[in-house]
Image (cartoon, rainbow, N blue to C red; front, top):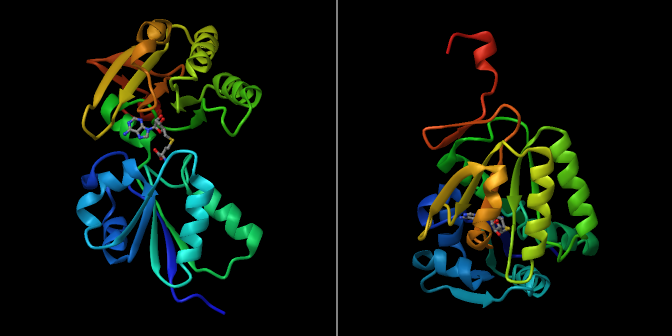
Length: 250
Ligand code: SAH
C-alpha cells in the first residue's frame, strides 16, 4: 500500500538558520514531525514550534532512521542532518535501509551547504577545483582505508578537506594524519576552520609544517583544508588559482 506521509532528509547547512536553503526551511515549516540529533534540532528551534519533535543522541543513527521511516508512512517527517545530508550525514544510511528493505515509503533528500564549502568561503578560495574529502573517523571505516585514501589524495595533488579531524578519543588519528600530510606537503598552506558560520567561528591559516602547534584547538567542530601545489597564502587568505592566469591577463 502506498504511504500517506513522506520522509525528507534535510541538510541544514553548517550553522544557524541563515544558512538553510529556502526549500529546506519550507519543508521543515510544512512538516509534522522533526527528528534529529539534539544539536541540530536546537539550531532550527525557531522553525519547529508546535511540531512533534524527537531528539536522539550520538550513536543512535540507525534507530533514528528506522523511526523516521516508520513515522513517514503516515506523516510528513523531517530527518535533520548537519551540513549536507550526503556528506558524512544521514542520507547514506537512509538510502541503504530503503534499498535493503524495498520500503514503500516515499522520500526525498534536500541538499545543504557542506562544511568544506563553508570553510572555503572563510579561508579565501583554497578549493577552487579538484578536491578530495577524507574523514578521520574510524568508527565505521578502518584506519588502514582512511590512510590509503589520504595518501592517494596527497599523491593526486588534490586539495584535501579533512572532516571529523579529532575527538577526545581520536587525537592519535589526527597526529598520524598530520605526519603523513607533512611528508608530502610540508610547506603547503593549511586552513583550520572551527564552527564555520555559527557561534564561536574562528579560523587559522598556516603552513602544513605548523599544524602540530594547533593540535589542542582542532576538535569535532573543526574542518581542515590542505592546499595543493598551486595554493598560496596572501593577505591571510589561501588562494588556489584555477588556471585563468595561463589563458587571460588577470
Ligand atoms: N554533513 C556534514 C558533515 C558531518 S561530519 C556536512 O556536510 O558538513 C561532522 C564534521 O563536519 C565535523 O567533525 C567537522 O569536521 C565538520 N563540520 C561540520 N560543520 C562544521 C562547521 N560549521 N565548521 C567546521 N567544521 C564543520
